[in-house]
Length: 53
Image: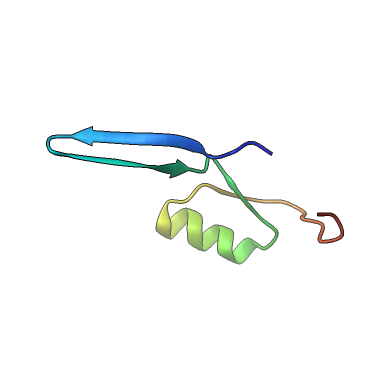
């Protein structure tokens, strides 16, 4: 799995630095629709096995 991209914003007197996940994987459709459409978070539905660590 790839780490989130480090992003920087520099404008005027302020600058912000943080991580931006290119996609967040969810195993349920409801948080995907809510996060993608309302919050603008990039999410995708996939099968996540809890048997593996």
